[in-house]
Length: 413
Image (tube, rainbow, N blue to C red; front, side):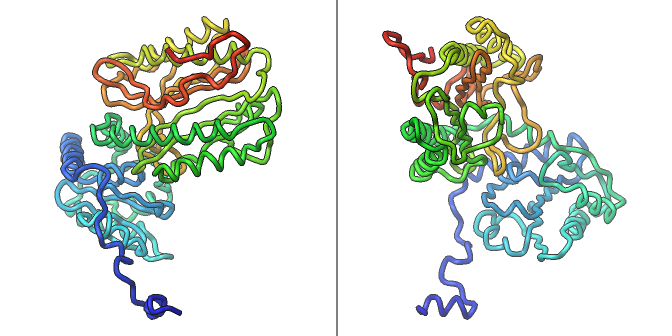
C-alpha cells in the first residue's frame, strides 16, 4: 500500500478530501442573497414564519447545492431571518461544507428519523408558533415524513407554498441564461454525434453511447434525463429509451437529449430516417417544422400560452390536414435534477386554453410532435426576450428527413 492509502486506512483524509474548498457557485453570491430576500418578502406578505422546502431545484435555486444526495431526505428550513438550515444525512457534511458554508447543517444519522430533526429546527425558527409554508407538491417530500413532522409540532399552522418558489424560478436571470446557452451548445454537440452515428444496421445503444460521450467530453454534467433514443415504431412510448434494436430501412430514429451545465438544461429533439422514409414521413416532417416556426413566432412577451398552442396546432393542421392530437407543444424548463429536466413538481406546459402570460426570461422546451400521417418530432430550447423568441438549440439546422431528388431539405424559417 502507498503512504497515501495507508493514511486513508488509518482514518486520515488527504488534503482536499473533506470537500471544504468552496467551488465557484453557479450564479454570483449577490444573486443568491437577492433570491432569499425576495422569498422572505413574499413570506411576510403571506404571514409565513418559515418555509420547509425539499425540491432539489428549489434548494439549488436558493443555495446552489449541486449533488446527487437528494435520493435521501433533504429539507431546507428558511426562517424569516437568520441562516438557512439544511436537514440532511450526516454523511453529506463534507459536501455541504464545501458548497454551501453559509447554511447550517442539521444532520441525521442513517436509521434515524429526519422528521424529528426537522421538528427541532422548526421549533428554533418558530419559537412562538406561527405558520410554516410547506412544499406539499414536491416529489421529494414523502407524505409519511410530513405527517410525522406535523404530529411533532401540533402548535404550528401549515400552508401549501409549492407555487411560491416555483413562480420565482420561471424567469431566468442573465447568469442563468448564460448557463442555459452553454447547455444548448452541448446539446448541439450531442445531437450531431447521435445523428452522425445513426445508420441502417446500427443499434440504438450505439447511438446513445456516442451522444453521451460527446456531451460529457464537451463539458456536460449528468442531465436530468438520459438521452431518449428509440425507433419511431416506439415513438408513442413517451419516456422509453435505447435498447439493442438495430435501425432498419424505412424506420425512423427519435433522439431527444439535453446538455447540462451546473444543473441547467437545454433540451432538443430530432427525427432521423437513415434511408428512404415511409409514406407520410415527409409530410409529417414539413408539418412539424412549420409548427415549430409558428410556435416560435407566437412565443412573445404578453402572449398567453394557449395562443402559442393554437398557433402551433394551426400550422401543423394546415400542412397535414389533421389537427394534432398532442396535449402540449412545449413546457418551461431550466434547472433540473434527476429524474427530470423540467424542474420538479407540476410542469408549466404550453397547452390548449393555457392562460399563463409569456414573460421575458422564460425558457421553454418548444416541441412540435406530429403523429399523423407518420411520426415526426422536432424540438428546441427557446428563450423569450424583450422583443421575441430565440431558439438556443439550432443544430443541425436542416431536417434529417432526406429530401426526394431535386428537393431542398426542410429548414426552419
